[in-house]
Length: 105
Length: 190
Image (cartoon, rainbow over all chains, first blue to last red; front, side, top):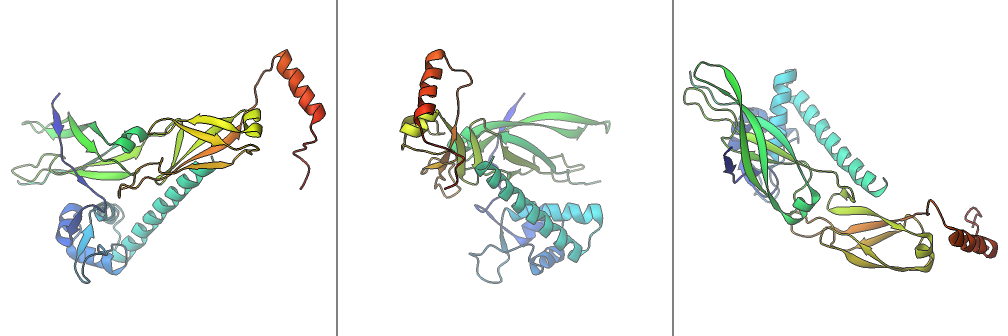
């Protein structure tokens, strides 16, 4: 079997992407993404000048989840914001639980 | 008709050693493709990916154009890979910090001494002070996982006092002698 050596894009804080790229990668419209920014679900990279729509590449994961939720549950913008925020909170709690079980097995 | 290929997601496990040192790993995935008759087949592909030092649990990466093939000249989809840290027999992960158990014999805990502690960067010697109690944590600075900023977390060795399951006649005699001599009562409230 052929093995393809790849140079991947890591979806973390080491790379940035634009609103247009987020729209292309997620399948959400720019309006829907703007709504997620307005609702505080999606946050522009802090080191960018105010008003610039540049995001960490880690946001790709969030927006792809948002698109799946929109498609699977036909959520509107407000519902989408609640669902994505709750999923983020679950992830935070999972990490906290993991940290606690490491300390107190 | 022109149609973009589908995106696919897969998950792969990375060992703590690989996350500590950085590594190259092969990720195998079967991606559905259509033959000229329009029948779907799962075609195996293997991608070699460089895992950077300090990989975090749940970290994702994107391989552009490595997902499903586009139809009629449409763009290929992407492949997303989620990397999770494989549970380790010795270390538990808490962010960049690691926790491991440090089993001590009762006499080591009472008398203190030097013990060898395994770390991801090699074995280190740890001085155990006399009268070390169970659950006491020893911090081995910068012996944890590297973070994205290159700074290492710490390794905490948590004391567990173990008792031999069987003792020979001489050991029993010595323990009986200790029991007769000692005034220590762990159930007395201080």
